[in-house]
View 1 (cartoon, rainbow, N blue to C red):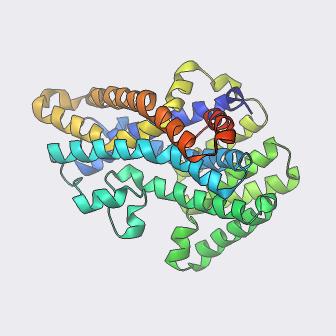
View 2: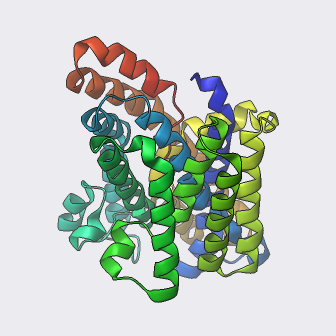
View 3: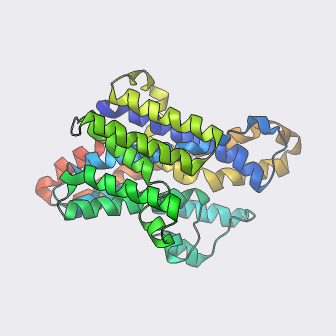
Length: 347
């Protein structure tokens, strides 16, 4: 599977990351600190970029799982992909937030060390950046996939999705214990399952009638969990985009700027929120006359894009290759690096 085959998903990742960033700089910043420009500019629907990330993750992680020989290899590849650049981005965010003393966003040194795990809340801590909450969902999904690989049940993926989806419905109507709710990703599991089903549809490894029935079930429970009119519209768009992708009718989205945003989407997601808030906050104090314009968010957008690009270019890819080279057997190392570098990744 070459990279070009998944150019559509790379573009979608770019859109998702950009929407989340703008939502944080407009609607979310307004909730925290207040903006002087009109709320009509708030991109509140941008948060659905996170749901799109989860769907993409469901798709591409099964691609990775299908191309590894063991759960150990899968874990190493996921670790190399996510953790090294996360540690760098999280450390930069921690330092800048503390140096500026951004109100309400400071965490202790203890919490900083808990964040190194990427799942601080599971350990009783607080995230360095509020956007990092989604990373725990991703890690728990990877853990589930690793268990499936280790137990040799990848071929039973459809049945596992059925069980998982059933638990999501049971949890919605009858409230399962919070531990299950958290560790099984029940509030957001429908998006991961949808991504898996779209993968199986695209690769024709599932009966299409069964796939569409299960996708309809994931769609319904996603709408029930969301419960908003805008959510119905946005979730419907996400499913439509994936349907077009599976049918090979989304190639028009593979434009250079979106593919570029997709390539830096992980680092952009990691560095945009608190650092962007610091810049907006400082500009409001230094140039109060400028704060009445929505353009006040532009410097934060530029800074986040630049920092994300630098982290991607000089750290993300290089550190990933170094770790794969060090931890995977030499015979399969070159092949593993090539496969990992040509598979669409998710944040």
